[in-house]
Length: 104
Image (tube, rainbow, N blue to C red; front, side):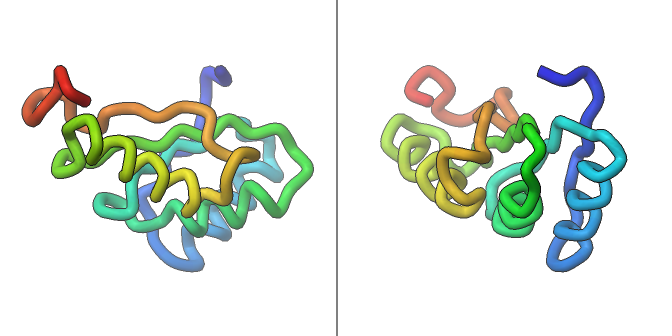
């Protein structure tokens, strides 16, 4: 896992451009979160998939998606939004201080 990365909370075209630029200057870790929180996984995925650079991408489970089945569904949504198997490297709990943490 790279020690330095870009945390992306932008939306729309600004996300795509920021991620492409970050990768072009050497960033190898991009951090985002579910569509419910940041709403930019699709743009992050498009930017990362548009390069031939190995990039480590993290995304996160949103608070309202805690619980076993909800987590599986949310993971699949994030996975698809990011563009599938080439992109998502780590999936984390965004706010692990409430909700159905044991089930999650």
